[in-house]
Image (cartoon, rainbow, N blue to C red; front, side, top):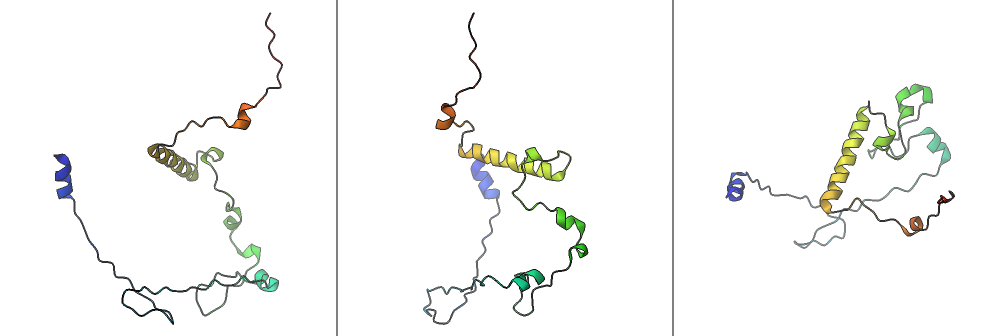
Length: 142
């Protein structure tokens, strides 16, 4: 009985979605067809002088130019300490930082989601692991 009551108490909102249709030249003008917007991918810049002096691709406007790069000493020091590689695991971090606790929370969330999906935590040994032979001498029984 609790389930139907909880369904009655919930609010439901329905919103009608109005989508703007953009037409291309040569698009079908029938009522049921949807026009697609074609976006051209810019070609990569190969001019080495331009790549050394400008931050190519940063200008998001049609008019204007890309910003000019400044010398390194004009940028703040923290900019050069940003980690740009693969995301660190919480095992590699210092527990006194916010990043550690955020990474730990994300790792726990991933583990809980795997458990909900039924992914087992035990993985059987692989074939190359079964052929392992120890280099330690066998113990002689006396």
